[in-house]
Length: 390
Image (tube, rainbow, N blue to C red; front, side):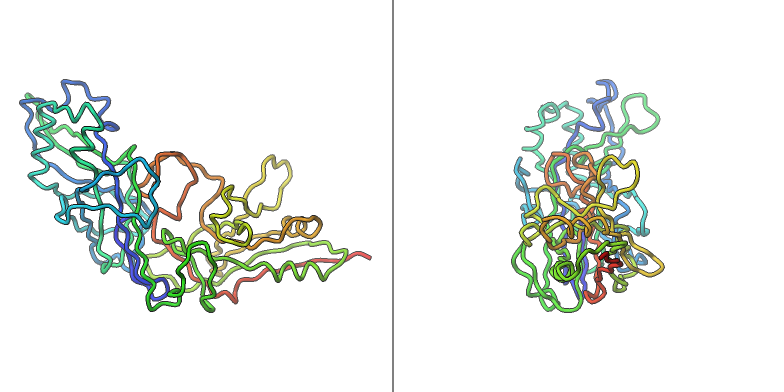
């Protein structure tokens, strides 16, 4: 992630993406004859950004700036959190200004710094040992920092695939340029997020994993760790008051949502996790969730999905089976954490620069943008239709 935004509810959010780069993924199939050689000529060198459709912006009328900086320290083989940050050279190795469109994947390019490009290419031509030893390569070039301009009000998600330094060159006898890509693919990366909530309704939020009463409006914002927690004590109290009940339909509804900035799209789905011990989402390492009402011939349980209904701007899902189970068993009535990540959707590692480590895991859409959602908490309702037997 690069860039950021300024919002009256969530405050000022800035994201800087950090990543190693790798000469291997796109060049393994190149034969020795096809690689740059001592007689190769460099035609041009670009930095290429692969932007995903999770882009957010208050307006797409103006161009958005991206800068690339050389790291001054390595990315180590440890877990990084979005509070972590690395030192980088303030002088960028690439600067570009681009116009984007909402909801579209885009590849854009800008010129790479000439001195760096020549140094890289001369090392390629001479078959420098750094291109045969990944650890020597990382010592020479630890990685990059990707930045945007918060004042331009755009959160720019950059895919690890097809992002990196592109060298266009000709070998002896060539009439068209060849390409050598040093990319962020298969590379460790993480985001640094600075969310300054000073002067906003969320200013009191200080401690991770804790719930705060912030007034009538509540919300969630990607990459900041801000999510919604629903106190289910009223549901438990209600279930204690009814006897011999049969619940015909129970639904959880939220909304209508507060108006989003023009360049922000609402999440299509939200998921309902349990707040284990009525603490935070991270006290639930198994990602236990409310399950969807079963259907005939269903083999495995599916997560309950709060689907966004565009006409009414409401999120809604049936939780009938869950409430029936809660009523008839000794199951604890746990609070809910509302979160946009699907607990069952797996992805390969390092598909975006938001990856924390090199292990496959959950499809963390919550980390691939600066998308947000605000709802009046008085519009969050559990609707219960039931009958009783004598």
